[in-house]
Length: 202
Length: 221
Image 1 (cartoon, rainbow over the protein chains, first blue to last red):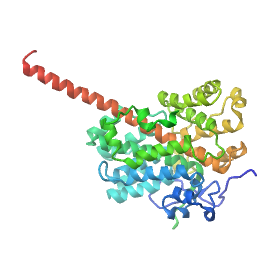
Image 2 (image 1 turned 90 degrees about the horizontal axis):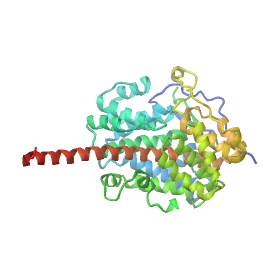
Image 3 (image 1 turned 90 degrees about the vertical axis):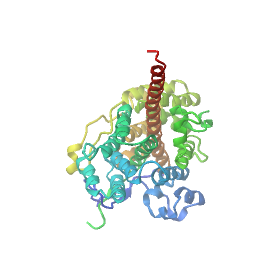
Image 4 (image 1 turned 180 degrees about the vertical axis):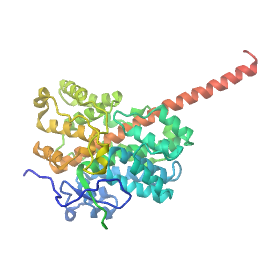
């Protein structure tokens, strides 16, 4: 049987970057929730993710999903040292803004605001784009994330110099690299396997 | 075999055990260990499904080539060469040259962001190579190009092309993870290499300063 894609003719895709909470609809059939095996549950890592069509779709290859989720959590939530949470989320937002992932940018700009309490600055990145002039430290993190997101990759001595000048140590720069690199993974899945939906309240 | 390398990111970034970057990478042990597990799940899968090793390495070589990272491209192409007819790697090399572009580009949904739309090529496998690669791999390379260089142009129609070429829904999830994972792995490698180069310059400067200060103190200049 040849499978077909799913269509969502009634959905009005968001047309601007926002910090509001968006939904997401898959273009391919997620793995059926009532057929999840132990291997699939291990892949989902958190049982609550079985409610998400995105994670249920990725659960079709559960081993990759499991490893990916654990990488994600350590890069963003392991705050034992290194870059503050807010700035890891800033790297994720800048990467998503550059790749054009409205969904990922909504989630991680919200986190960036939550941890930095600088909602207006975060919003400027969303509204004005990757050239927004915020302050030297945030500008350096945004520019480094964007250079790493370019294909071919444009990250090098110039970006590292700017991060150093803005006060980041080598460990913090590794966190910028990890955060931006990881969102090049996440953005491509989110953008290519489905589409965002408008905020629930609108 | 490349799947026996304990940590492919270290291998590709030239990170030595006990070096500064090794110590720093250990501060995110789960991220490090699971980046390797992702690599193994994609290139030495316990449950490969219907995506062949040849398909995995052919797409990986193409993706690394589009990123302009020669040593990563060689790493995946060496395995492709081992698996298939050596000429297969020449075919992929030709396609990398044909597909090379500067990204991310693409179009936004109709609205205020369309002023940011950036034009770029829609890549198609060359007529000569379509038959050599077959329908499945041809569709996979065209989709990989979309994901690497202009992911915001993705659409249900792009997925339908894969389904029509014989990729199942589950195969497409694996293919999408493979291309997206490589987009991550290659950037970590490039980022850490750049950092190692920059640190080497600083270390040399520090050594130089120390030697120079020593020379000054000795009154030799």
